[in-house]
Image 1 (cartoon, rainbow, N blue to C red):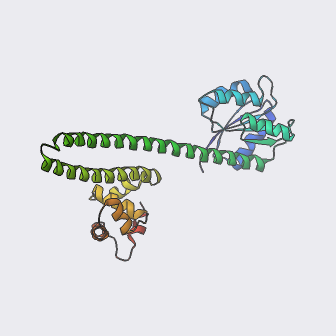
Image 2: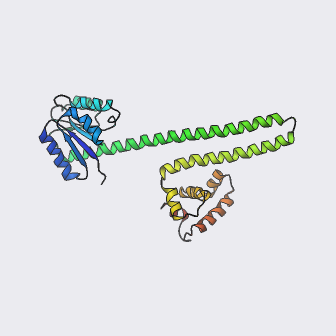
Image 3: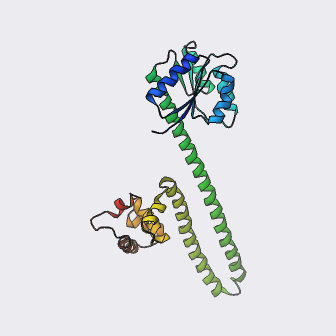
Length: 278
């Protein structure tokens, strides 16, 4: 079971003992920290890098709402989810107030052990999903930025070649024609390379260990082989692969046959199914 760091904040020592006991019973792999001083909670949360804070609402010195506000103001703690505990603020308006302040959930006292465990797991699961989505979006932004940089570099190279062709088009039309054919081929190759580059970024994000595991098992594979394996792994047809690689479907079929022989797959095993293990 994955371990998480949970910080309990409550001015009642008995309430803290109750929560620690519940976690020791139901989630023994979780690491728990506790304080009955809400003012110290911010420093503790930063020091232990808490994954979740469960705090009482009504405390001397700093209330649970004030604690959340301070957590949200600090870049090191702003993303830590907080569950609010209370035995006093029990109305629907209180619930809305707690959630509006930034709490992810709300538990009424006296504490019911299974509810505490269920809401803890739910808060951590939701936070993990949120972080995964944020990380994925960050990766997509990075990939798009890298793709734009490469596209800009490619367009710049083609533009410079076209400028040179423009300078000789009247004086040497035959040479200009050959240069134009060369530029057309460059554009086709560049388009295929950029498409593969973008595909590879997205594929690697989902299947992070595919290339490494495949090369470990079959060190004789070339980059072209690995590229084809990636397409096959996704279940792409010969026609679809041919369109991406700017080849004929028959050519792809032959290449796949040779690649299958290269990795020595049993004839009864589907190539696609074989690649799913990597």
